[in-house]
Length: 145
Length: 145
DNA sequence: CGTGTAAGGAATTCTGACACG
DNA sequence: CGTGTAAGGAATTCTGACACG
Image (cartoon, rainbow over all chains, first blue to last red):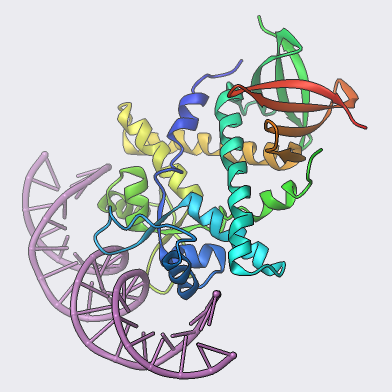
């Protein structure tokens, strides 16, 4: 029912290896290059300067951070307090990924999408399955054959 | 219990706005610039040439596609069949995102991480909750107060 | 504090061609 | 078919300075 290439697939997702130039970060987030350079100088964000001779590269995680800071600044926070708040928010993404990597056991896209989320803990003989019907994702329990 | 900034947060994740230069794609995937240019010339992948005067920019989705093609080529497939297989796989990411955006209703990172996945369909009065304990993600059903 | 701009040098990307096969 | 390289022009990024506030 499920191909189990999924876990392997998840690991190969090129997200930790993403290194964007400053121009691409600026365009993706709407934060100017001037701002990014200043933020980096102040230590609010970091770049992978060492690995690239000269050009500053930013990870996807930093891009998220930048976007968060910007959203808080839009809400009226000063730069430094926006940074502090964004830092807490950063933990979310890591948690989501760990959930993702641990619980997504398999997936199929044929005849309606299904995602196997592994044993349902209150009833471990059954697997928790998310399935998509009419554009709606629902949950059900499936017995493992 | 859950802050509900989550859905908003998900929407603001800068992933569709990501536009990487060819060098960054090459480094992220391990596919050479020569290859990427050839693949684009053949129509196997696409760049956002129109929006950027001159420089080819690639979306994150294309980065995924490139990585998939490369993995299939590592398995011994020719370029053209690797492309065909990668295309099918591409649907996965879209499905995962739709699941994500639809069902992740809230999240908290305090005193053990918790993710609210909304009403558990076989028992809709209760919410399906994923919680993290000792680095392990488990499921349970919570009554909504 | 936080951001922008003008300035010149350095690194990146572009295209079209040619090579190997 | 699929990838690499040398070549010269075009676009991007770098740093340090200066401006405004």
